[in-house]
Length: 162
Image (tube, rainbow, N blue to C red):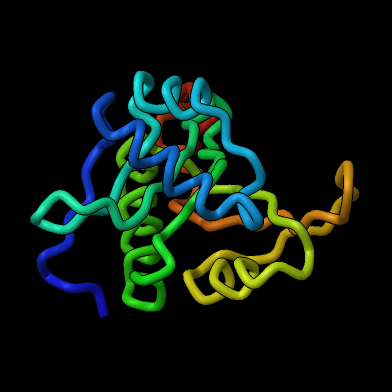
């Protein structure tokens, strides 16, 4: 269960150094995360962080809301000492709430087959959509459903009504 003294908020420029340090500390799982990509995520408002009330950075989630009803998750990372305490789940849930407010249909991500993060995605509500070839190894494509596509905005001409 997540501690009550942990909050999720939108990342700001002054958080960049801590986020980059956390990403670099987890390079074996995340790969090399570029500072300019993180900066762009902050500027676009597409990077959330989890922190304690004392300001200690516990984790982050970097994503992009696309125009095609999908949110793409690029990276999610939680500091080693705070794993299995609900921080990652809280980040996913915050992203799901934001995506729902923007009427996105799903969150999608790609993860190398065989890494432990795949079990985390399954436990947090993602469904394995497919496996595809990647540059170095096969990738699992995970989807987290947000809300069904709504057709309530469509109107039929009255002549089509029976």
